[in-house]
Length: 230
Image (tube, one colour):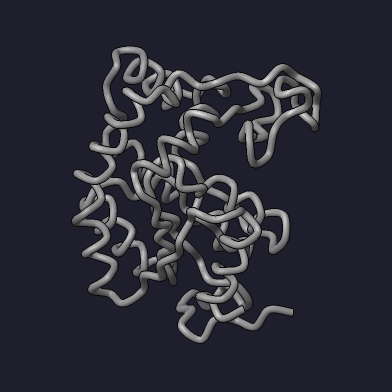
């Protein structure tokens, strides 16, 4: 049994702290989040997943989001914040701890999250996954993903069946377009330009825990347990 983190401010969450996972693309945020979901009942909240769900459900907001994305623009903060607040409110009411992945991306979004404390929604810890650009390029260039069940593979560390098929659903795996080196470098540049102020923002609140993510997934997970005091 995991004891409640001593610094956990969310009184509706009796056991596990609410987390933000930060780190460059390819740092392993999705893989670690998946383990936290499976082992401890966390809910992984991804803004991308929220957008896709709204579009799939053909809601009025979903139609607006689709038009924005189809035009190649970013979904503005007012829409993103609206969805995030709605999802987080539901999770807190159901006593479900959450991991934020891909949010916040801007200082304005971080300040919006801070304002949600007035409504009983707290962020307890920010997990910063550290890895060098060279290590990211090596990792992502060999990453493959199942388009059906979203299982993530690495051709050397965790290869799919025959280097081609998903071990879970046997669908042929693919290499994402944004895993090409040129695209990776652009994504990294954008990440660092966006998040430097965010990291400073949360470090001033003394809630940042750092992990070396250039390790096997098992080791990264064990390090996460260690820094959380579990």
